[in-house]
Image (cartoon, rainbow, N blue to C red; front, side, top):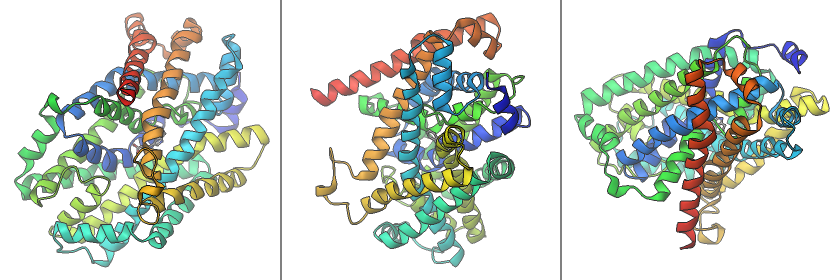
Length: 457
Ligand code: TRP
C-alpha cells in the first residue's frame, strides 16, 4: 500500500534525519517558553515530576504508536487513518482522528505564531540595544508595552506566518532537513552557555535547581496533573498527526523504538536545561516564577543585558528560539498541506497559502487577547481567546487524539502488523503493548475524569 507515494515524496535520508526532523518538531516554544512558565505557575518540582512520568508512561508509547501508524500508512494522516481502518476492518469513523488533528494543528499554530512573533520582536530589540543594562522591572515594562500594542504584534505574527509558509511551500526536504541540521546543535550549545551564565553569575543556581526538582506534593492539584499531561503531548508534538506525517517519510529499516526514545530524551533535556538556565535568573532579579507567559521574555533579556557580549548572545538566542519555533510550526501545518495536495492534487504553494491565511486569521484572536480583547466581556470560563485555545488544544484535543491513536495501535490494528513495524524483541514489544493498550489510555482517562469531576463538583 502507498509505496509509490513514498517514492514520489522520497523518504528521509536516514534514521538521523527523522530524528532531527522529529526533534525539530518536538523542540520548540514548548520547551523554552511554555515549560518554564507553566512549571512556575504550578509551583515547580511536583509538576516537573508528574510531567516526567507522563513523558515516560504516556508520551513515549504513544509517540511510538503514532510513528507506527504513519510509517505503515504512508499517507497524510487523514488518509492514513482511513486506509488503516479499512485494513483492520474497522469503521471509517477513525479518519476523524486525522480531521481533529488538522483542526488542532491550526488552532495551536494560530497562537504559536503570535508567541514566535514575540521572539522575532525581541531579536530586533536586542539587536537595537534597547534592552541592554535594564532591570527586570524595566524589561517587564518593555514586554508589557509590546503585547499591549496590537499593531506591533500583528506585524511580527504576520512575519512569522510568512516564514512558516515559505519553508512549507518549498517542501520538507529543502526547507526543513537542511535547517534542522544547523539549528538544533546551535540551540543546544547556546542553552549550555546560558546555563553556564546562570550558574556562574547569579549564585541562585541552587534555588533554581531545588525549585525544579524538590517535590512538594501539597502543591499538586488535579489541574496541575492535567496540565503536566497536556504538556507532555504538546512538547512531543503528539496527538494531532504531526509525528504520523513525519513517520510516513521514515525509512522501513529504521528502528522506531530507539528513534522515538532518542527524540523524547533530547526534548526533555532541552526543557530541563532551559528551566535550569531561566529560574536562577528569575530569582536573582527578584521576579516571580509564576509570572506567566512573559517569563522567558523578561528574565533572559535582563540577564543578557548585564552579560559581557550579552547583546550578541541575546540576538543569537532569540534568533535560535525563532528558528526552533519555525521547525515546529512547520509540523503543525504539514498534515493539512499533505492532505490537500494528496486529496485534491493541489500544488503545495496553493495549499500552503490557503491554510496559512486561515491560521493567520485565527491568530488575530490571540493578538487581541493581550490588548483589545483582554477584558472580561471577551473571556469564556475566565480565559482569554489565547488561554482558551491553549487549554482546549493541549489539555483536551491532544490527549484525546493521543488516546485514540493508542487505542487504534493497541486494540484495532493487527498485532502481527504492529509487531513487524516495531521490530522489537518480544519482551520489549509486550512492554510497549501493555503501556499502549492499558497504562497510557487509563492515565489519560483518569486524569480527564478527575478534572471533569472537579469542574462539576
Ligand atoms: N512540540 C512543539 C513545541 O514544544 C510544538 C508542536 C509542534 C506541536 N508540532 C506539534 C504540538 C504538534 C502539538 C502537536 O514547541
